[in-house]
Length: 128
Image (tube, rainbow, N blue to C red):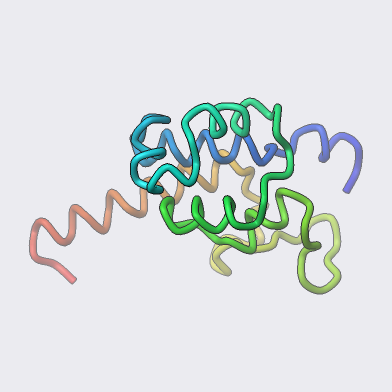
């Protein structure tokens, strides 16, 4: 990854904040939903990049709550490296359909948000 690409990469904290926002959860709601395993103060520090490498247990709890990849969170936290060797243009954990589009993290979140909207709209109208 080039320095420019690294500078543009979304941090773990920013990613968690975007996902929480997408789920329309407050910090306190996350605290309650996790049985206080993740306090609102701790999550705030994570989202503001004051804590860069939370425990794998915390990441697992958040991945379950948010419905996101645990492996992806572990990669963002620096615990594991992406599987296999990839060139700079390859993306990990993206839908194969969009792999060649090199979506930014923000674009991926928006795409997933739109997909959820489309699915809920179909379910509401009785389509499959």
